Image 1 (spheres, rainbow, N blue to C red):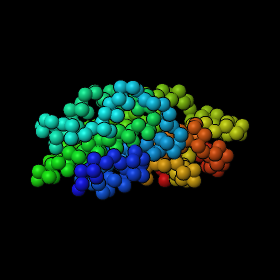
Image 2 (image 1 turned 90 degrees about the horizontal axis):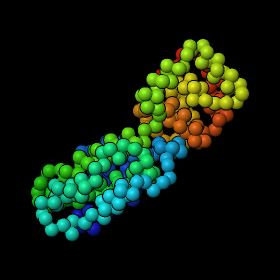
Image 3 (image 1 turned 180 degrees about the vertical axis):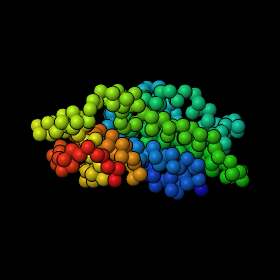
Image 4 (image 1 turned 135 degrees about the vertical axis):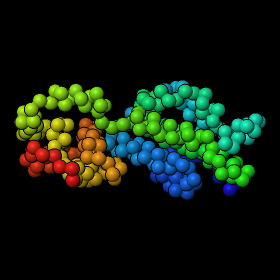
Length: 256
């Protein structure tokens, strides 16, 4: 492979990165983790949950350095091949900061970081292949960690603590159904009402609205995404209201 091809930055979009995972980066051990991170970012964008800020200045400076990392400027051979990019990545302690969406600023920056790290991995891997080595560049560990940070920072849905509080304050189910019913009669769709939907109905609504989500998402995850999309105005209120009313506010919630 030509050096220019090995050092090319993939376009930082879900489609381009997902395609590159199948070909250019197919030897990466963490292709599944990267794919899951990309899917989450797509979901965040499609349900209108992404912020549109520049991100933390320290993070942005670090990102720019990683995007332009050039092996031709490295004189120490110990920092090439298996170790290519490892020292530069480690100059900024990213574990804590990247757990917050405020640090990222927007999903676009997450795509850019994935693109930069995948490029670094590919350059290092090509150098190792040229040496006849099957070793993985150390950057693959950083890729796994960053994917985990993306899942934390961009998670859709309430925290465990918030869920416990909501459950404690929910009260008897009859009272809750009565409250939901009164709100629907007034044309008000609340998160409580959306939670009455089955997985099948929630999926149907999101599919019709082109909301992206992973195919094997649990019902609780699907409902959280639907609530987020509704909150951000990405779902038509009348569509949700008619589906909930059709269920007659059953006391049972199916997992179909």
